[in-house]
Amino acid sequence: MAKDLVCNMDVDERTAKIKTVYKGKTYYFCALGCKKAFEEEPELYINAKTSDEAHPMHHHKEEGEDEPSDSSCGCSCGHKH
Ligand SMILES: [Zn+2]
Image 1 (cartoon, rainbow, N blue to C red):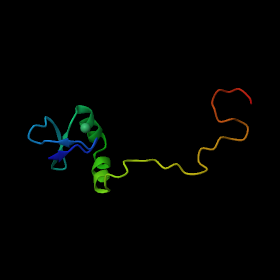
Image 2 (image 1 turned 90 degrees about the vertical axis):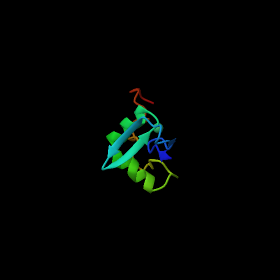
Image 3 (image 1 turned 180 degrees about the horizontal axis):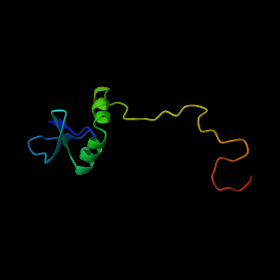
Image 4 (image 1 turned 60 degrees about the vertical axis):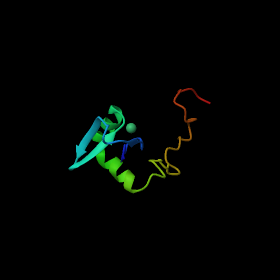
């Protein structure tokens, strides 16, 4: 059984129609969208696999980043509070 690295689904390589070859290795996908996503950033998915499946790309937001300035409420409506 091969694994669709994009969505983590199991793909049977004997019946899989959607596949791509990257650096001499064949990767299988459940859907065209997954193949496309992989081809756009193959390293991302290959590396994500080796670093284990527990946390798929959670973006941790830095504290203090993106703070609204004192004079505005942070919304982009433009009115004054
Ligand atoms: Zn998939």
